Length: 66
Image 1 (tube, helix red, strand yellow):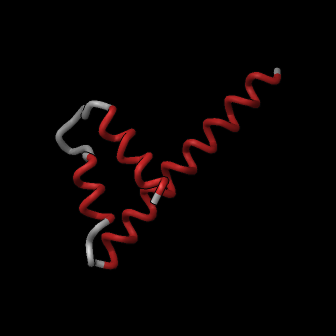
Image 2 (spheres, one colour):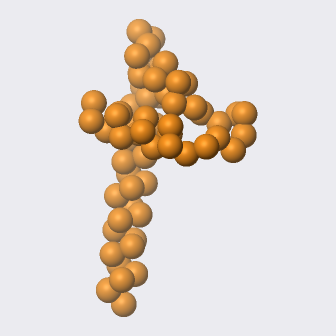
């Protein structure tokens, strides 16, 4: 739940670049849906965001060590 709040804040803070991009409301709809496939999409989206942040932090630390 904490990760969902962080993702929503990030999505709300950044402006949309195209009409086809997912907005915070779209993600909220997926995450609060009763449909199993929507919940799965929400879980994978949040998982991807978390993995991207972890990868970015790890990559940043490796580049600072050099």
